[in-house]
Image (tube, rainbow, N blue to C red; front, side, top):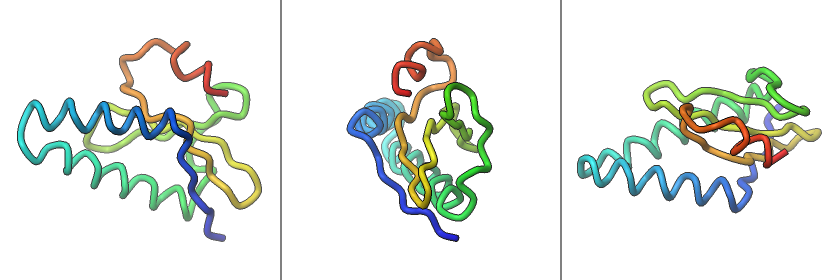
Length: 98
């Protein structure tokens, strides 16, 4: 089964913030971040339940090359991405997105 992916506006804002941070560190690194994010999201399309539930049916999957977690919910054939948050962030930041 292939799952549809939808990003909430907060997740897009998270991605834009991370992209800008990494581009500021080194030109092209933001693009590498987005490619890694895309790869992780492709895995979710095929295996949406791969991430453990961490809070009120909210699941988390870690990105491989960057210290970010993708927080999402699975609803039938839909993966709703609620946040792409640095792993050092306080849990309340992602818990509010349930």
